[in-house]
Image (cartoon, rainbow, N blue to C red; front, side, top):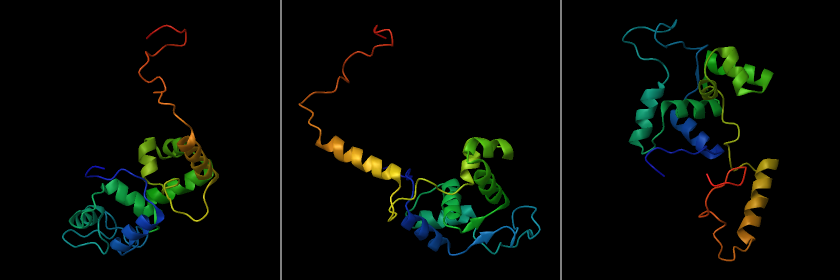
Length: 165
């Protein structure tokens, strides 16, 4: 894997990152963002900012973007803002990231950033039906004989009409 991890974190990883953060940020209790009701020039916020936490993680050899850190903290219940609460409420109401983005007037990737991990929490004792299906397929694929064939990947691609592309 490269310098930056690009995988969906498991439950233990989320708990570990939340433990390192060591706090719960809720903007209803402290609004220390620039211009917020608790913001005072030159005074540190009570909580650790995402960029400051990112630097702490980097010093520990953990390379994550601030967006991924926010999403992990939201997933672990350690980060709550007006945007994350609104995104969660809309997602419960509509069940669609596209609809959440539309209602919040942001892009779908931006809306996703304010929602907790959904499918990415691995290592749960109770596996989802999708996880069970994938496990069965992997077991099947591992046991299917290949007969030394390359499955035709070196064959020319053909279009729907059967002609070469």
